[in-house]
Length: 63
Ligand code: SF4
Picture 1 (cartoon, rainbow, N blue to C red):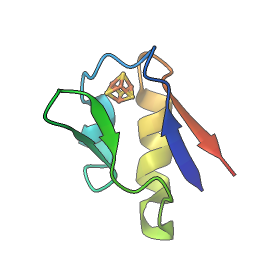
Picture 2: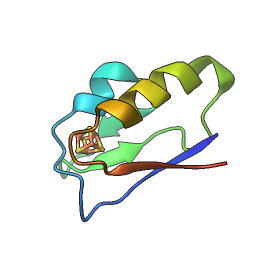
Picture 3: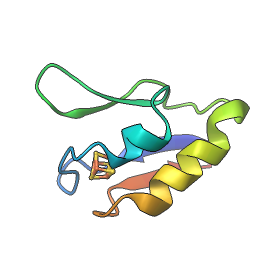
C-alpha cells in the first residue's frame, strides 16, 4: 500500500498522526509529511484507520 495526501484538503489537525505516528508527522511548517509513503505491512491497519478517520478526506491510497 502507498498513501498520499491532498494538501488542498488537509488542515493539519493531526488526527491521522494519532492513529499512525510512525507514518505521519507535521513538518516545521506545520504541514503534514508522510514519513513512510510506502506503508509497511505492520502499519497498514493503522494507516487504514487514519484514512477512514480523516475529517477532510485528504488521504488516499495507491495500490
Ligand atoms: S487527518 Fe486528514 S486533515 Fe488531519 S492532518 Fe491528517 S490528512 Fe490532514
